[in-house]
Image (cartoon, rainbow, N blue to C red; front, top):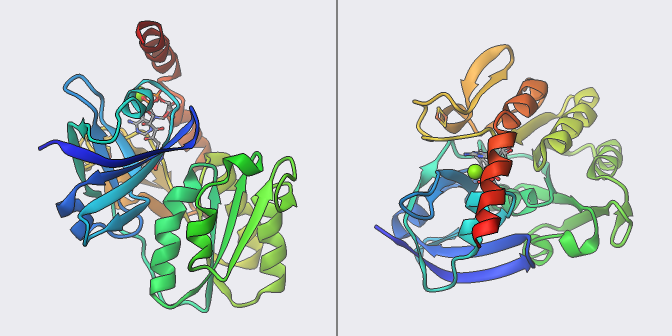
Length: 277
Ligand code: FAD
Ligand code: FES
Ligand code: MG
């Protein structure tokens, strides 16, 4: 069954795209933290993307993706009214949401969009959510208004200081943890070095820290082993055991190594795609 793109927007031209996709059955079941695996066409590879939002009444899900290689570039060529060949989901375990006094949700780059759905889930559970978001500069910040619509505070960090704190989200996080003793959990989604750095900051505070692993995935149902990672010394499959895990127990070094294992082939494939386009 093809999945129609009902809305398409370049959030950051040439780089980050938002698509609202008609997928009533997925929209009805999706929970914060879930993702989909999609294929653009018959020859397309399967790529996982987080469900950044859903509207069960409209029967739609929202995905936000960064164009980094062939498959995301191919997806970005699709326009409103066109179809994605298949979208499989919702996949992964939903975010474990408990009643908390306050939660900090940290998002970096495209991870801000993915974090948005989780932050919304915590808000709907009655938790005070402090959003901490970061990007290289103010033009690369995503979902500020959406987060501002339900988070009492959206704290911003940019590398160049063009908006908010000049520096990293971890500096903003450290300060807030020192000042706000009601924070009972930190959730982080973004580039691996950012999630690793967040876990380092929260460790001395003893605050539960949840990170969402973006391991390479193929089948998304626990059969192929592509998404294997190590958590607390145990082998885990991010697609079915996660993608969210205890940030203090993840082997980030292994995750980084496994994410880079096909870099030559990916570059070659993207170069060929660009030469043909
Ligand atoms: P390629 O050139 O093939 O790869 C670029 C890099 O992306 C690789 O070096 C590798 O690190 C990673 N990658 C490649 N293939 C895969 C794969 N099959 N699965 C996972 N990572 C891969 N990105 C977003 O922009 N938005 C999201 O909401 C988002 N959510 C994700 C949720 C999950 C659970 C996971 C595991 C990943 C998510 N990603 C998300 C990452 C996204 O899947 C990759 O950027 C995408 O697959 C790259 O495909 P490509 O062919 O364009 O790039
Ligand atoms: Fe195949 Fe997780 S993607 S086991
Ligand atoms: Mg690829």
